Image 1: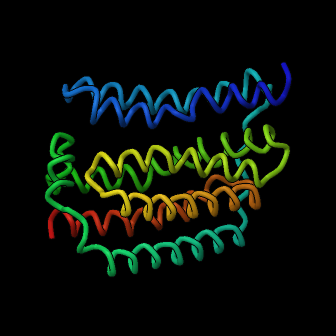
Image 2 (image 1 turned 90 degrees about the vertical axis):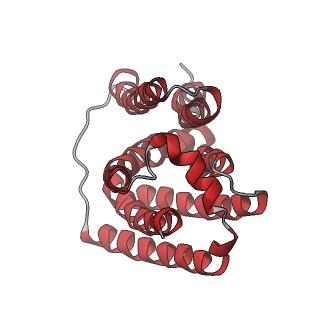
Length: 228
């Protein structure tokens, strides 16, 4: 199979699944159990497809990446810088967010309960963000580089696809258009940084650390919105 076609198919099989998951959960379905089942099926899918593709189609073997201290330092530095930007943005524009609308939208998920929110925070910071780095930074960025035959193309593709489902979620949660655009620009920039980190250090753990630090800031803001 032609390498460009192969890369396009690989990306297409996983790129839009998170967006479909969000639309199904919050727009197309109102049964909580079915939504949860579909959500976890989507998570299994976006983990399984890249793994199977790497082994069966690309005929590679997995090896544990060597994560150098320089990469971890850069991850920490970028995570702190981006978290600072997130918190400063919240300081200036946080009062414009409709907290009541947000709480109403997440009510069916149970996240308005503190214990569930805490459990969700741990899951999203330590597990979901790692899965996103595995899919978007390793698989989609790598396939994007193959597809466009350059790293910039891979970074842009991965960043755009990562931002897509987050932007849809923000809109559903009640953010107005300019808030969504502002958040998407931030997400696009962060995703590009994380893809660059992966390409530079060839370690999902590096970009995951930076991502996780940012998620701590995001969930801190979420706590203030919901429980503050």
